[in-house]
Length: 269
Image 1 (cartoon, one colour):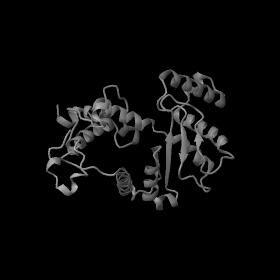
Image 2 (tube, rainbow, N blue to C red; image 1 turned 60 degrees about the vertical axis):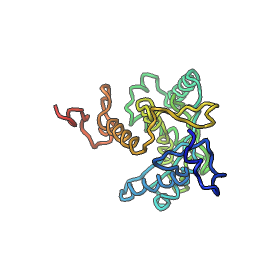
Image 3 (cartoon, one colour; image 1 turned 120 degrees about the vertical axis):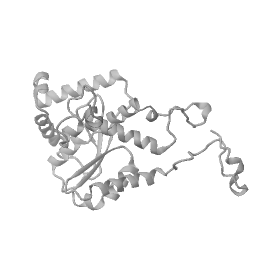
Image 4 (cartoon, rainbow, N blue to C red; image 1 turned 45 degrees about the horizontal axis):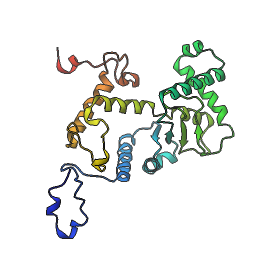
């Protein structure tokens, strides 16, 4: 979109104005590094009064991990906060993902000496304990701070590589193995995919060569407060209500809710 205000800009700054671009009239553009540090500081404020341990798993963004390591420096030093970045083959074709997943399943069955049926019948907490034991074996002799290649491919994260930023000599091998198992973005990526699929204004913008990097869509929201409201409604629905096929919502899994919240609970019969 061209800016009608650009032609009325003062002469001393007119040369620095790109007549082909225009910032939104509401809201503002924030530098990404400042946004990342602000995000880390907000989370620190939210959890600072808790005595629990926290594990922040992030995409392979060096600046984001630096922001969290800085914001949570006292907690990291006390061993109450760990930070890891995860990378994997994001652009593999589905056939390749299926092949890697089958290979990972075979490797897991062989390492645990179980058949496919026995593996599927294991309770989740038992399976996690068995996987942790296998990872402990692979961590023996590993150099401190080195990357760790997850040995069991999954379809959602094939060839996953974990960089534990808070790796330290005082970290037990058992604890390190558990952190490696928990270092996944599967749930976050799934949630983001649901938002982009179900909330039209959150879909990825489409840019064409003739647009010179500019994007516009009539379904996008150019009032930031409106998008915040929609995302808050969606987040509540996802965490507490779920879909018709949802048996246990995230709130039920974590403990705050004993049952699903239904529309009749909000609006009456």
